[in-house]
Length: 348
Ligand code: DOR
Ligand code: ZN
Image (cartoon, rainbow, N blue to C red; front, side):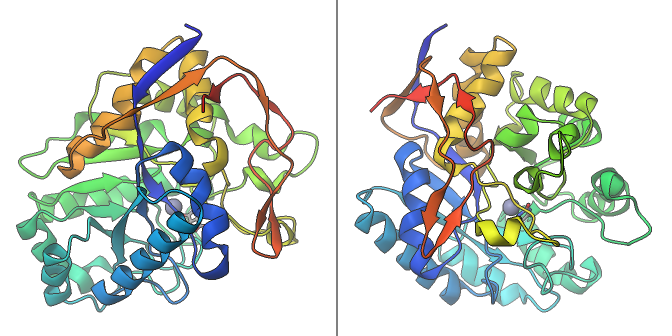
């Protein structure tokens, strides 16, 4: 297969940041995707509907400036120990698509995150009642747990007990990285509270060796961190399978070059500029390009109960070289696999 035309896709997990950098960032996503679900881990975090709505307006203005007036930002709230059930009702009435759980300290801008899920039990009960999905950064944070085991431990210690306490709660297990997460999502008994999972392009393409080949490579460092090859294989099997529970979420997370190439570099891989081509590369590597449309354009929309997009995008087997950097306001932004070749390009 040298060419594929698919329904226009959506990115169900994206970091766009805010302010002057928005036009430089949103254009990459809007070129390929009709909609993106925007993560709320700004400083300060997006904890109220009012904040989410004004952030959405700024994103839409930036998309317009960049020449993509049709692009739709779908918004999320950041769950804290203090989120009230009334704010969840407000979210439902105002079209907020999901509420994001960051365990405190798990990743970039998560210090305002949840310290103990019991503190948010009433808000979560309200989400279960109203059908608003909880979007989960699934890692425990105790220092005693090895970094590479944090997702697997989260399933047993946090996620499964949470779903048992709230059987109707709809959950998206974000950016899954392990075979344990694939198995949990595939086999979950849903009893009304469905579960889905997003998978990034970088976790489909790379295992943890990528962070260390020939020296330390900060642009391959993200959280949850890349895992062993057996986990990458399990993710690739899940993404290219017929299961409707797995869908596209890039977790593209831009950080300025000088903050990545640093003694204590930030977590996050910037993949937005070639997102769909990177996924095409991963799917083609196992001869499953024909499965890309459901993963990228159907499963997520169906999970969130939103219409599938109109229009199409064509990806062709034409090699492209990934630029060494992009501009992000007054900073430079280095993409994942900068300077390397990709086999696929989007036409037009
Ligand atoms: O690598 C990551 N970067 N993981 C996250 O969960 C957050 C993200 C960011 O915002 O930079
Ligand atoms: Zn993320």
